[in-house]
Amino acid sequence: MRSRLIRIAAALAMLELGLFVAGYLVYWIVARPGDLDFGSQYGAAYIAVHHGWSHLYDLQLLHEFEAANHLDGLAPFQHPPPVAWLAVPFLVLPLRWAALVWQALLLLALIAAALMSAPGRRWDRALIVLSVAGFQPVLFALGYGTMSPIVFLLLIGTLRALESDQPVVAGVLLGLTALKPQLTLLAVPVLLGAGYWKTALTAVGVMATLALASVAVLGASGTRDYISFVTSPDALNHQMPWTVKALVGTGAPSFAATVVVVIAAVAVAIWLRPPPGVALAVGILASLFVAQHLNVGDFVLWLLPVWLAFRTGRPWWLRAAAAATWIAGWFVVGIPIVSALIDIALAVAFVVATTQTQPAADRRQAVAMR
Image (tube, rainbow, N blue to C red; front, side, top):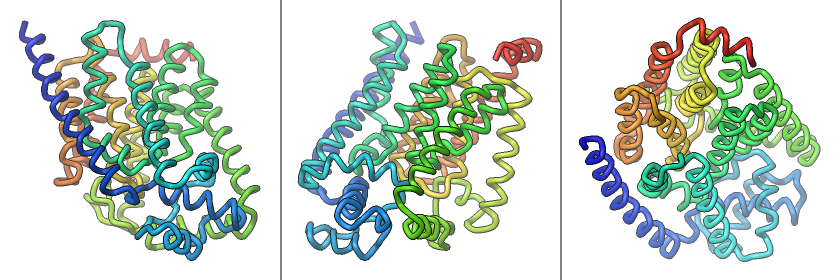
């Protein structure tokens, strides 16, 4: 009875928050049509088609595109070239209509991810859908039109494929998350350390293929421009209040902390040999923690470990940590340090839960079967 009351209360709270998210999203689309991540993606595709792909990262041409479209302050295009490839078909539409179509596709991606993750029971499906609708990072992901919902759907597909014993398919889907690589930076080494070598190596192969194709399209000058951009002091020392930079600062301290996190995450994966869901959850949380660049919408990826924590058989305190993580999504803007701390807390909770529920003998047997 108590559990049922908690679920009803959670559903009502998420429904109310979902109504707020929906209402504010409509306001955003109407009142802030040019305030878009997708705007720089669309602009980059326009520049590449009309001036050549070697000019994809030309800031002067982006400023000219802004002026021609009466826009103000588009962010520089920071994504790998495949993200611009995705925007090319949208050039047949004016930017505002293209953005609406893109935002609709992102919404469909989130709905698909929720339905793919939902268990068979109607009540549980409703809670998962409501957890998407009422999550503040969803507002920013859809409002800005970021790539995060696409990456999130690819990760859900990766998990489904891993749990269905389709490691190569999982690797292909994981490799495609290189569309926004900082969000899944550590997922591949963690999966490799956990023994999912087919998935990890396939993902590396897909990422390498995308990288080679990008170099071929950009040419030597375009590739130099991209490398110069992503390794510039402004990019590397950019303040990120939601990541490890909030705890140790930018520059050398953040790079040293990143190395420590990478070593720790891989070591834990080798030691625990966790099931695929736990390995992927830890990889995602660690990636977000050390990312050099994030925006609020990227925290939609928190939903995957949150949903995993509520699966049958998980300890109550892991579910409590997951619930706190979901709630923290509403404080990412106002109290950003909360996101870095809750990220660590949920990852540690998954590790501790795995040590308690998966004896060492079972872990060794699981690895032998991979």
